[in-house]
Amino acid sequence: MEETQKIIDALTLRIIDFDKGDPMRIQHLLKVNRFAQLIGRAEGLDAHTLFVLESTAVLHDIGIHPAEAKYGSSNGKYQEQEGPAPARAILESMHYDEADIERICWLIAHHHTYKHIDAPDYQILVEADFLVNLYEDHISEHGIEAARKNIFKTQTGLKLLKMIYEEKYEVKNENHIKGEQPC
Image 1 (cartoon, helix red, strand yellow):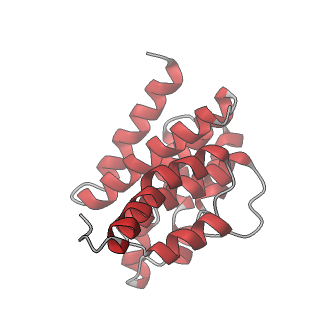
Image 2: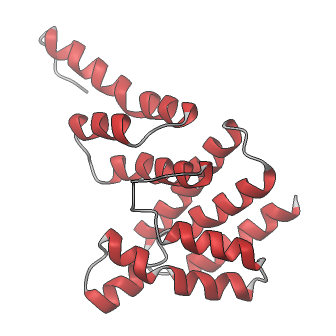
């Protein structure tokens, strides 16, 4: 197994331990990580940027439990505030390079901030999180369309969004027109 994948696997086990007893959060981070990996590879990210992206995707919601403990809320802004400190502790204990720790913590501190997305790792992280959140939060067709227009920029992210969500609505709408009940 490639060395970077071993590190990502070890990091994944660390965050699963951090989130133990919370299967919803664990399932979420695994899905976001896989979508980030898929989009990053398809968009041609270099190996190092992909490594940083995957590490961030694994840790992106690490601030939820600290935010809930401190504020009684998992609001995105609180996640951004509370996430970098525990992420840094884990990454330092795993001997990540300081520059990578800085980037990962910065991305965690901005993953619910959708203005001024200025780099491929940031864009892909947001798209991967949206792909999962649209499903987990049962977002309406209107909300999905708003995300398509306002969030998604990568060709792969747009393609995934269409394959996962838009085709479903097109079929549902066609059946509705014919008087059939949607599945």
